[in-house]
Length: 492
Image 1 (cartoon, rainbow, N blue to C red):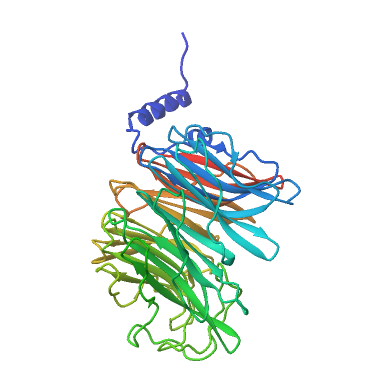
Image 2: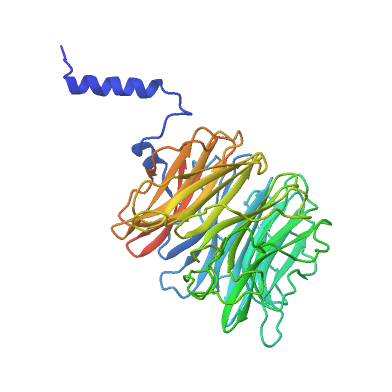
């Protein structure tokens, strides 16, 4: 007769206990996670800047930029999954060959897939667009969205029903260059695009455009951006907002969002403010501001409720007593006709940067990086704003390490019960991907889980919820043996 030792009995008991836990609450084991991990790009070159879109029927679309192994040219590649991420199609190049392309974006609705990217040629760049009518099986012709504007970059794309909207930063070809925010739309599922509109019309340089449209109010279009002017040779920036209520035919006069009253804070007066980085600007230092106090406002995020009534704009601002950056929020509850006073969301003694957010139901979920710690490294912080801004929840620290963590994405399940946060975290000069999950709508979070299984650097994770499986898909860039690939992982 075969006799089990005490270790074998413990193993059996452990397996019985694990099997008895319902699948929807049991965390996946490292072995299960690793078995789900997929190399999507399989490239000999450098696959970077991945983006993801997931539809209501569980279709998943991935795009990325891929440079050849000699780094002479790059193309935009596409891969799709029709089975909620279990398998993916072979990568398909959708851009022109022998060109330099980068920074793709993707959005999808129904069986329509819309992809746009930057194409660089000499000192100029354009925004190109391509669409599929059959869930990514075939793609139509390439359309130049930005022509005749020049040096077009920093695209934001959104779609709803038959409408496709695009905004980008570009110049009109005049000397000297003045960068504006331009808008173009399609009302025929991306078959053609109408005349380009200049919606910023600023004397300074307009940057970082972000567009959002309400799911149940497709005629409304909301755009936010940074507008920067030079003062004594140093640029300073403000956040602006513009809206259209006629399906993008026209936009109202841009509204200055990052204006503060003197009661918000008592800012530090003088030129001793700390320098910080923008994702599109060189190192900045603030100077005299024509607003009520001197401060710099950068990197806007704009999101809306599904009916379009509530609009949230978040940004980084050094309007603080220390001169370090905090995360600020303004909210509109009347379709953008007016905005509330600014709220300091982070209110940190350290530096708050890289805000990410999402809206689900009547709640707003926010994460950001913050150095409010004993060693000064960035950690991941979370805050939930409930009932359309009526209740501001506590700030929670999601990351548990003292190492530097960089926030990447946040996603919420349709029933609002599950909140997922992903980030990249450094240790011993190597970055890994971490995630944490809340099963109670953001009240508490699980111990962070390391999702990386290689000795390379894992960076730039992006996350989306699959409404069919109620799981999340995470895509990131993995650096192994001097080449980069795009990996995808399902996490329940």
